[in-house]
Image 1 (cartoon, rainbow, N blue to C red):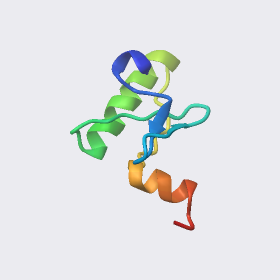
Image 2 (cartoon, one colour):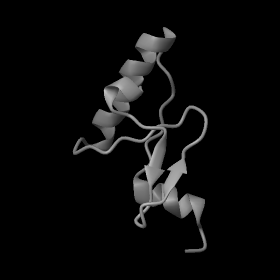
Image 3 (tube, one colour):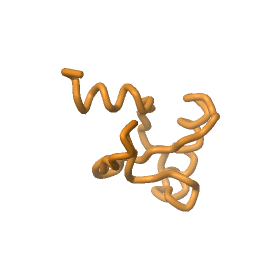
Image 4 (tube, rainbow, N blue to C red):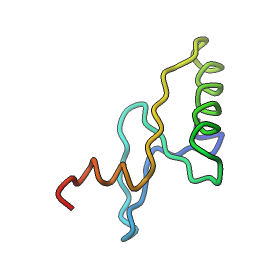
Length: 70
């Protein structure tokens, strides 16, 4: 996944990096969510031999989940 431009961390608006956790990746791209999902599933299928489940979450939604009180 990282060879295709995906990262295992995401920086917030203050530049603070956040590790995403096991089997979680970020991608900064102009692609829409469906295209990113298809890209991730295709890469995962090549690596795993089966199409993986993929959940797309925007950066802002990720940080809302991380800090629901803000």
